[in-house]
Length: 245
Ligand SMILES: C[S@@+](CC[C@H](N)C(=O)[O-])C[C@H]1O[C@@H](n2cnc3c(N)ncnc32)[C@H](O)[C@@H]1O
Image (cartoon, rainbow, N blue to C red; front, side, top):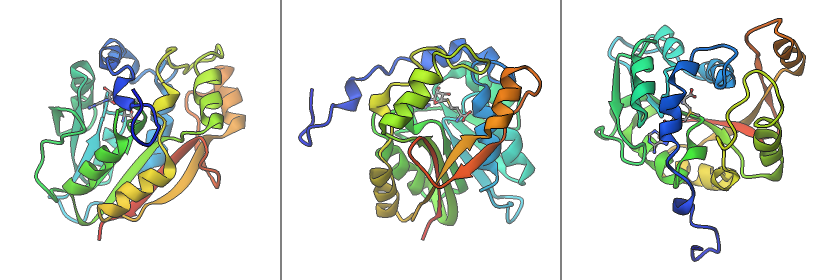
């Protein structure tokens, strides 16, 4: 089905992959496993999280998976809450810095308006049928003055080449299983910033990429973690950060 704007209806695209994440639960914390790059990105995301202003400050991690962001958020002084649909992943999150986890769809967050000081959505928007509605939900539960941080994959040909053709096929450690990404779900940068703006958050976008020298050393088995560096180009992996009016 096509929508009125001529785009493919994203709701038709495969959405049953949550069971894949249940099956990958043992991989979350393996530094050379299929989900390894997510931990590099979590570290980069953490740099944008301000320190908690008081001991009641709470951070919501949308689609928290196995909790890779938990230690970073806890180190900044937050009570850390996670939402995900993968039961097995949520169990892992509870073992890694999360104070509370809730099994729910990120499209309908089971929280009151303005209840979190920081909301993060890392590597999740490119897996949902309506990422712009998820951003609106994230803004709804964020308190005024609070910080929103999202990172995802751009809807560009370059992103398809890098994130699917290369990342899912080159025989390297940290390779995600084939089919992890569907390019039709990749996220339009203008629509994302508009959705945030319409819900009170002006997002600033920047790109992220792995440091190439370290990638080579990681591939050779000499190091277990790769630094993500900031780039001007947002055409592959990008991060948006902003505070709510
Ligand atoms: C690529 S992982 C990212 C996990 C985590 N944010 C991180 O960066 O390590 C995507 C996560 O989104 C979750 N997910 C996908 N669609 C979801 C939905 N509609 N509601 C809740 N969780 C969802 C999956 O279960 C999975 O844990």
